[in-house]
Length: 83
Image 1 (cartoon, rainbow, N blue to C red):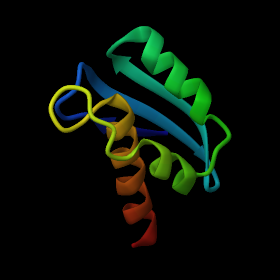
Image 2 (image 1 turned 135 degrees about the vertical axis):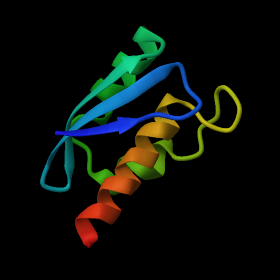
Image 3 (image 1 turned 120 degrees about the horizontal axis):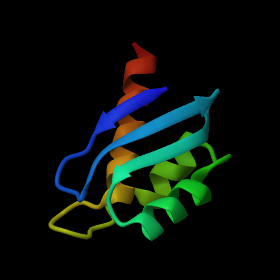
């Protein structure tokens, strides 16, 4: 399980569980419940790169959003795994 502290969003963090290169589980801590639950369900079972491609750069407040922060978290996880 990975925990990512979000920046610039209503949610304070994201808990992410991966199964190989696929997203198994996502839980946003805070944020707009309907939207974050929808994003969590829609990304479950998808590949990391696919999720990054779908969500990266989506703005909400300022230059980021909960979906964008999930993409940033997955990018960070990929970078740490590559080391």
